[in-house]
Image 1 (cartoon, rainbow, N blue to C red):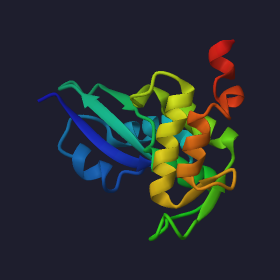
Image 2 (cartoon, helix red, strand yellow):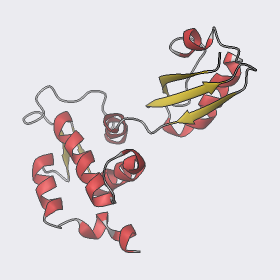
Image 3 (cartoon, rainbow, N blue to C red):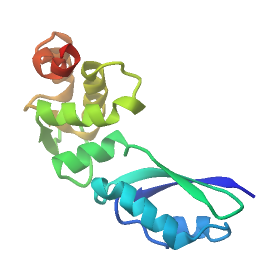
Length: 162
């Protein structure tokens, strides 16, 4: 009866209640041990929703794979707001610096389609546009045009050149 369970849990704050408890209850694993392991591995995400996969075996052994939080969650966490704008082209809820965009892009790079930090940053900026988040004071679409023009290559490509 080995299997896999996939859940979203708040980083460092998982508990034996829903969504984990009901999923793990019928399995042979020690629920408290799984919760503790998840909290240890997701501590750095401190409350941000993190995708977690628990693979378990019939003998009660288990392994945990922690994914990277969704881009929107990372943006909300970095910018310090709870919900995006209802009118993202008019109503802006936060502003990120190019360094913050780069940091989010680097965290998400393994999960994105992009091959380098510059294109990963453009994917992050696309999410910012749909949430009503500006970058360096510019609307996300205007900022993307500046990135395309190479205006931020010095910041976004500095590690790639190193």
